[in-house]
Amino acid sequence: MPIIVNLDVMMAKRKMSLNELSERVGLTLANLSILKTGKAKAVRFTTLEAICEVLECQPGDILEYQAE
Image (cartoon, rainbow, N blue to C red; front, side):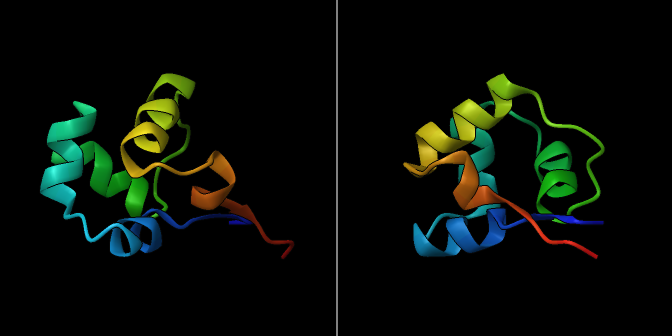
């Protein structure tokens, strides 16, 4: 898949666990895990906005395009 999810990288930079991010964003661990592993088919803008707010980053810090 040409879209790479760097959520784990941003979480490591902020020293934040998946549990903490889940609580602060208001998403289930299962949904965040699907996103983190790159298995998500879509991401709502409200979800992306909440993640960026908590991690103090830009959407481009989390999502990356790589040509195959």
